[in-house]
Image (cartoon, rainbow, N blue to C red; front, side, top):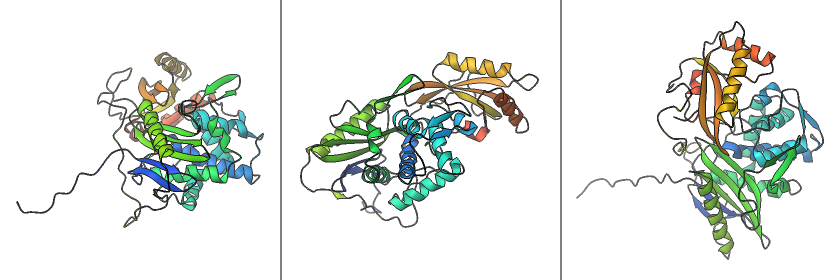
Length: 384
């Protein structure tokens, strides 16, 4: 039968890359130039710029950084820093590298730039300077933003440069726990302690990105970096990384392609092809039943580890509103890096009164972030 050839279906498998740092050669790759959401892998660039500032004397390890209301209001996972409190640079680095604190990411960003947005511009500029051609940053933490994208290749470049440029700082990526204000916090990176020679780097998760990991291990003088993006769960992410590292340490010779040998794009970056959300379903799991689409403005009070904590946060907030509208209580289940959490909100507000509600709550030391409908209806905002 004659006719035009049928194009092969594109491979939509999540991206992978295995790099031998010493030779700079890619030992294995799959879809390594497909754009993907970085999630908390973005914090690797926040740390790169922090290490750079330390080496240049613009920051000191013992320097105390003030926590702004914007930093304190970041959603979990976070250290729980209060607005106006302080944290040292060295503590901030440990919190970012181990438990991926979103509030700490903003503290560092604001210490190094006029605002988090300005810092994100510096992150993107540094990415370009390092050869991370397809990476764009929009915040210091990796929290969801449709314009914030990277690739497995670019993440390998960043990880490689962290070890080459800052050998005096990269021990922090091997930290398995640290203590802050009397509480012990354990790393999210399960590769540490489970894989021989593993000493870094970073995990990441959002509903849009799936489970991401940049892992590194050193054996017999060789360092390998494995990048896994878009895994369906933590266990498969870790299995894939271990399999890549095993493959690399079992290989001999100088096989592989140079890390910078990527296909040229005809015009600009590659199109965004992201994996399906891992957060499931079609019906909202919420305390008030099916709520989608949300048509009003809301106020986000925080993200909590249990339904009870979320309900108590809502009750505390409503009790402080006095004559102002108390809103409609809404508790959304959400998948996070360390398991299920609960997002506590009040909804039912208009653009002309939501700001007054937030000001009242902040005056009473209650976190509050105004949420427009377009944000609350994004995929992954809450389980559906």
